[in-house]
Image 1 (cartoon, rainbow, N blue to C red):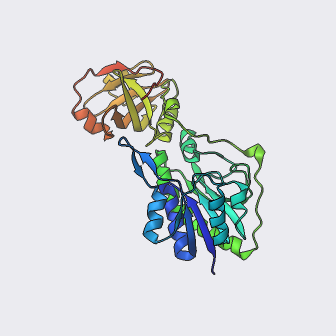
Image 2 (cartoon, rainbow, N blue to C red):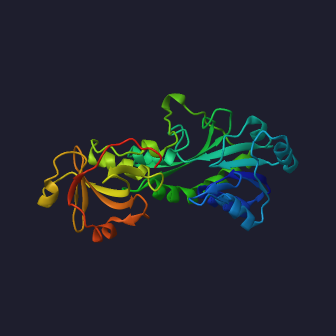
Image 3 (spheres, rainbow, N blue to C red):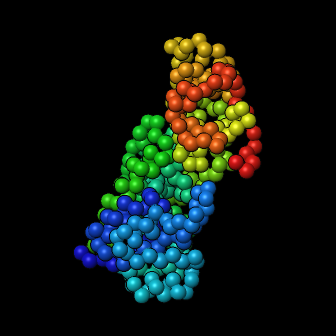
Length: 323
């Protein structure tokens, strides 16, 4: 089966689907973000998808504005059968209507759940036990188009948003190919989404990632994991920003050492030889990975080996300013 495809995506998550589609069909062009300053050095770098497209020998388009006449003319010249979108910007109708057969997006949730920019993060924050991917037809309103196919995936206990990202990314490759085959067959019947069953997954920010230890321990663990690895859930420790990147939790205190049982209110912590424990309203969390302000992420056990401070303390709640 021969299909002409234009692929649109930017981050690493979008690479497996690009590779699969290029192997199965012929990706005529890749559309991705313009090169941007990144990191502390603000070095101008290409997107992950651009690097992969160049490696595969696929022409790359990087429009600053998607309604740019020259860009639209380029897509018209390609005359694609299908436009595939994975982790890209919102396409205007002037662009997605250029596909001869259909334009579809692959979204990181089982729509209509978690419409928005951060479905993976919110599935973890909310403690969901399963999630998945959805391919849907593009329309003007974001993430509301008719559903084509879905792929369900269990969420491993203790997974971070980064873990779930890495689990879902390769699944998107098969879904992209299957969806193209379905569209090409002409026998598909899109299923309208139910707005009454929809939930939102707005973009997450560091300013809203401060940990509230007054939640129960499992909720705190889920919150931490939902913001990991980036932007990182944080608290204030000895006047510095402390990001907690991975944690476990325990409710039963019967087998805890007396040093940890002494913690009697939320935000109190104990730093021992092999444990960094924090009291929540109900239960204890154990920090497993962390990042102290100005340092690289590390395992808690490595942090504890070099710790010379007081064993007991209390985290501060403080507004984040320019951190």
